[in-house]
Image (cartoon, rainbow, N blue to C red; front, side, top):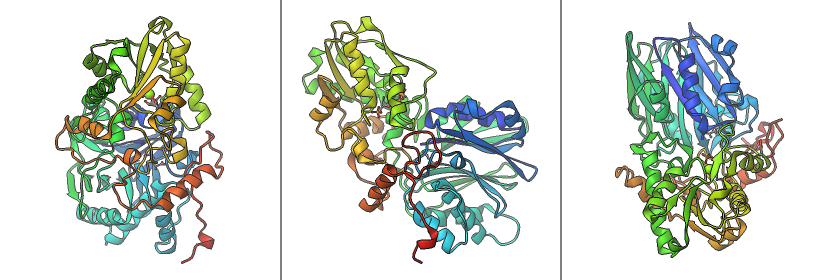
Length: 509
Ligand SMILES: O=P(O)(O)OC[C@H]1O[C@H](OP(=O)(O)OP(=O)(O)O)[C@H](O)[C@@H]1O
Ligand SMILES: NC(=O)CC[C@H](N)C(=O)O
Ligand SMILES: [Mg+2]
């Protein structure tokens, strides 16, 4: 999960891109970058860090031009080294920059193919650099002459969609030609666009989440469809086409559970409303399990679980209290590299208000339990503050399988629920009772908000990979790579996480 944005305007776009990235910061905290297009030149600045730290005034000044793209990164492939920050750039054909959210499951194979068949050298272990090179190669192949027609571009994306496997939403700027956005044929990762009617004409913004459009004053138009490509040409005219053979919409359920901001609307479902629904279904399960009478007070684990906890408390008829206060200057801990860093950050991030716990049976609600880092610490903090009983509820089902489509959950042994029963997880996090949402109820929480959404990418809960080509061998390899990272001088203990060994010299043709 990363944040991507692309803008075509009649004004300089550097500030617009920066502001949009700030609104997408929750999607990736490791690196950020912007590339703009001005007088046939690209200007680019990218580095590790938060958006506010990466861009100084001097960098902003150099980002000239009325169109450009931006990215905030949370690595899934390669390492978290600075060379893998995005956007990526390739000089031929035309000059293209690209920013990608998602993860390609066949990137190693593609990287080898690109080298052997297409004579393209890819300089990092980033799957996004592979994606850019596939795009560049297919545009090159489809183009004759110097101009690039939308239909040629759509042809190239169609071939790309056949070659590339995994989850991806991407924005790409083709120098002086226009801005392209595309979404994978399974519609796993989100992408939407909006317009602004300015004095000089229509301006466009493509972004991972609608919150970025709203914040920049753009009017949300619609989500990009699965397998669709949209292209805004040099005259600011929008073209679009479905570039996939059998597209189907299967949005990632984890966007609704945790990743997206609650004030975004993804594929027609308000993330906030889906989280309220998750609270309702969870309340019913708590009642069914006969735990409701035991609860004195319901508390969220800030921030992401708040909407679910509010509605859950209402449905149980219990008091909703804020027992943990979040230090607003600490980022999201789940998406931090390194378990030691995460653990330390939970204590730094959340502090208990003692009086809210003393002598009470508390129900702590979180959106999900992944590694169990947060829940373990929080249960202990509740007990240290004098809670009599600590019941824990998760608005998502147990996370059991690696995610391979853009969320960093690659190894089974990292997941606290993998290989454990609910009772065993409960023991691990030292709670008195533990309730998980049922997967059907989670899916219902989203379908209730938008009945058109009937199919989801929910592999981290059910192990069913929607692209159908994720082999046990692939999962083993990403686990091995995670356990034996190549050191790339990155920051966290598990940085370099899904780096896969690829040696051109020894690869069989
Ligand atoms: O089981 P774990 O591995 O600890 O992961 C789960 C926790 O991580 C996330 O919180 P995070 O601090 O990232 O962000 P938030 O403030 O949006 O809740 C999520 O909301 C859970 O609280
Ligand atoms: N989380 C993401 O979307 C990551 C994008 C890309 N796979 C990377 O590692 O940089
Ligand atoms: Mg949280």
